[in-house]
Image (cartoon, rainbow, N blue to C red; front, side):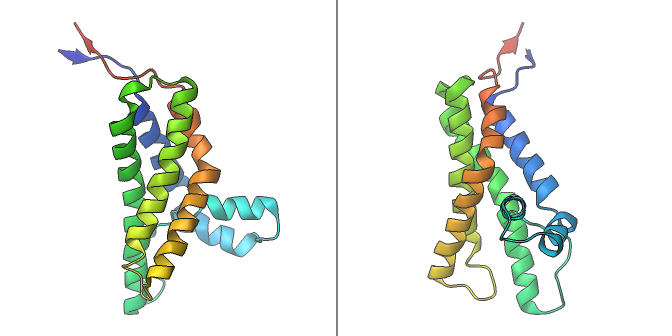
Length: 165
């Protein structure tokens, strides 16, 4: 029995999230944003929000703190994708795209990014509970301002995959 080629809400949300993380979270893009933009302009602020789920292949230096920060950043980007998939997989059974899919995809990114940031904040070099709350706030800001991109793709999804005869 073959599965029909229908883009599900969960699949669309995961694909959009992976694309956001790979395109805007990579080391080359995040370093470019830090060097060439400013928090005082709208465009620079938005690019900094988009680069929030940063990931890299190596630490910034050879210190233990840099290794812990690298692990936390990379794990945060991975958990973001996993949590979006889990949230959409659990909740999307009653949604088949459209406005419901749009808001579900958007909200999934808000909640997933906050949760991923909160959990990985305890791995960083100077971990505190207050720092974890601040990381969750930054994560939810990412979800709020980048989640509409995920919402657009989940809003165009067809629902659940059906088996073809």
